[in-house]
Length: 540
Image 1 (tube, rainbow, N blue to C red):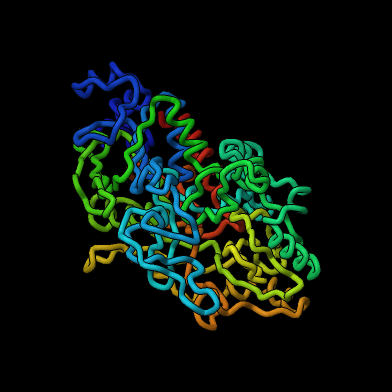
Image 2: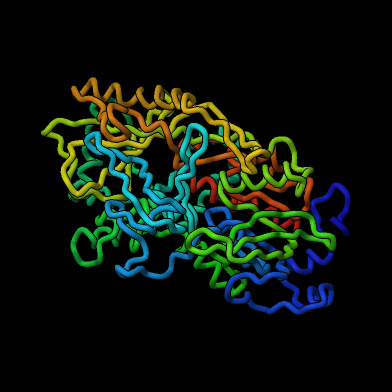
């Protein structure tokens, strides 16, 4: 890149002046003025921006907010929709039990994580639309991802878990744990609005009967039962239970968005970022190429999409800095493609490696008639069973919000599965492949069984075999928690810089090598806080 010091992470003088938000300096260098406030509306063809962030999930939202607070004008590019306009039913998001066109990203049939009940398939036909949940199929695994402004925060259960300090070194060995636990985890938890359920209310409310049964069974088998923080507004949920507000978590809303009580990124980091006046978002825009620009900075090619997924326009813009925050899968796929096709050929050989599923595996248990789990179940999980130290598994006590009594306990386990996959460029097909194998889930099943075999033995119960197919016990075909593909201090430096290309950064879950020991989004957020603070201090 012209104007850079060899071997440094500095950028051109133009990039520096743009990055500091100096309107006059940028105008003098580029020959055109830049507005003092971020322009409204989608990004224009031919635009030049100081910082372009690809993706509006946890990493991208943190980067946008902190850059804007430092005086940098930021443009966020989001493949999904803005999700700010109600549909014909008056709601922005559809219900888990009644999925419509809003539910899935460019599918004509739903693909629910739990897609059988009593052994019968429950998926249904829908019209093709840029819906909120992407069930992206690779060899051996389906990866669930949020599509829209707010990314994964729109569709996850909101379980905001900071990993135990003793497990951290295995996750990110090159990162100073003292700094993470003293500074960046607290900062992330504050920014995300993390809170915990009132234990007294938990003990009495009907909507957590399923979780209380989970507690009883865990403790009777000698496992630690833990409350887990969340980003739901717990006061709002109490009002839902009392019938004084519109129901959301108590109306089956989670998998395809939550209309009221959940504090997604739209309400936290992104709201703060927009309030600076320096952040603009282009929804239904997908970055297809990033390459060095002849005059410094990077040429970014962007496809504008309609709600059928068709490209309606192709835009070419120039950015002084680009932050890859498209999620583990999105960032990894894009970087692997750019390296292989010659747009960014000097990316190192670690790009695409170290991808994991956070050890996700699901199962259900059939309880006795004296252990009903409740017909009313909050969609927001608030508890877990911890057997990480002894068995390599942490199990979220998950809801099964069918609206009827099922006498079933349902769990999403996070395990210490050591298997890692790699993204590679398939030139013949013009796509990026992932080499995961379903058989690689076996360690996760074995680890989860350290909890549930013991509970079943103690309670005299059995596994449900009707939730993932006919006579299929384990949900071993999916992950909610994709991680890795551009691993910190391997594919990047220790702060997410793509060192061969000054001004390019990775700042999302692709930095984390495959596992966090818990639900990952607090760690993704905290790591982004750490990295962007250093980048602003040194590169700007």
